[in-house]
Length: 421
Ligand code: UD1
Image (cartoon, rainbow, N blue to C red; front, top):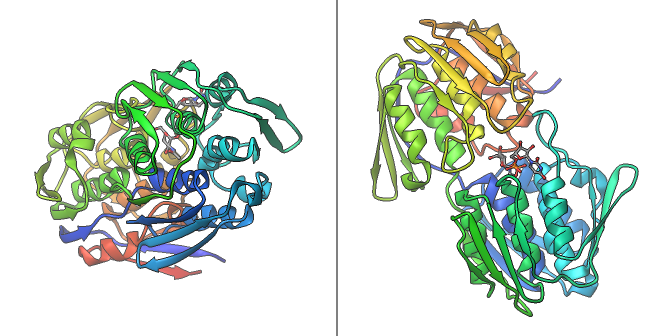
């Protein structure tokens, strides 16, 4: 028993959509509310299950939240002495992004207890960069059975040099540093647009941060912050999902709520694949012919092609004219969805961190399983180019990150529905 998606072969997609806010920003913004007592407003919040889990975590530590509009969340945070630094480990284990509670909880309560990070099926996801950063800011780490306890009676600004520009470690270090005594400098910081969004929200709270969006971020600690009033940046990974769906099926799509400057290299790559994307005020318009073209793509930290785009790109390229090589440079285990795409007739050979994709004219429907958010989205993209019906199980993974994917694709003319099985 569970929810499934049924997807039929799609003719050209046509229409316009309003893009949801970014999962990888909103979860950090929600964590950041802990930094200031009072009532915060966050707009453009996507209705996704990871947001529901983050709300439960916030409630468990003493905050309250309610929907004040279709995509608007109000979060009321009590004074630090009434906040619990110990969210239930079971809840925290359900979202990888919960590690970003470490920074803000340390900053206001001096301690945090977190589950060993959960999340997607990517292979090992170490947290040594988080650990090193928070330790340099004055925290101690203790690994207990199924959780980790972090303590810091007082955080002090420090010079941090990241071994790798980790996205969530950058978020965590920024949130720990905004209330620390003195100056923190993060070298080799992640440059992702969602880091910029977090820094903008924190600046609206009174934080002093310079350089977000570059690899050197400087944070001047302040004594107190006030609540945020902030709208979440558009979700570029969801935008990429609709663009690859368009590449798969052909057609024309107008997408509102995305600044194309945050996905330039992807847009260039999509252009090489025959999906033309043009910026317009407040969004983009895209067009694609009936069959994509092959291209070689490698994932890199921002501004490179994001690893989160990759499963959908591989799905699209699986029916491209020609042979593509797609290389993964961030995660060791992000390949399990390949077997599921193969079930749909994709011709994929994986070798180390490369996948050779020999495009076939059409995929073939089948029964496939989503193992994580983007792997699931890739199966939806694959199914749009598959003859006969595809049934996708494990869709609760997809719904951790996608707000109305089925409804939106159906509105564009795709043959897709959701049902209980
Ligand atoms: C974030 C995104 C995720 C995206 C990823 C890369 C969120 C909630 N998630 O994940 O969707 O796929 O960025 O763009 O924002 N690493 C270490 N030690 C650490 C941390 C990371 O070795 O302490 C390594 C990882 O194993 C990986 C690489 O650094 O190889 C990138 O990871 P990172 O940027 O940290 O990804 P996340 O922030 O976890």
